Image (cartoon, rainbow, N blue to C red; front, side):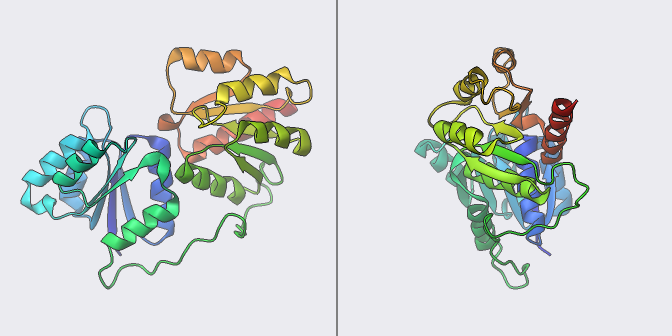
Length: 273
């Protein structure tokens, strides 16, 4: 079994990526920081490294520099993950031995798998089949799950996170509506009467704060609980979200997939009291 090491400080993204790769048959180790990741790389000798370039304390750039100076580690192929698609940063990463460069908001789970397969294409790797699309997946779920049959609107324009969260919600039996368009969110709320909205803030069109404001100003939709799930973490952003009526404000880098599900269940219980 091929071994993959992920070094990623973002809890949500790291957990989602690790889950996807484990489901595809890879042995995955997840590290939350650069120094710990280097120790795991020395100890486990992975077949592939997936490395976030932006991390607190020891950045991915420092990991790359240390890795390239160590002959036993420099041979490990690396896929870099970054929030920026700046050409200068891409060239810098390639100069430090990176095999491929992924811009976080622009790739889907299938894009990641394709690049992983390319790097681990030697004979004997895990047999990987193309994942089913969300529309045709039929996940098994426990009928006792508190989310079975619940209508959830998931608002997110990041392709990777959109699909990972969608699959998680479907696996729990939710009836899922996914969109990245603010006007479409409002139409879905009035037509489908969902139980909850899970809402990103930094969207390409109408932002999450404006969507939330419009939901809460409309008498027909204001009773629908909204959980904000965002990379924003400043105190003023959190206070703004709560002032606009959000039931929760979750910071992506600080919550796991299971914690998100737990918060959804908790909010739905609160609404029913």
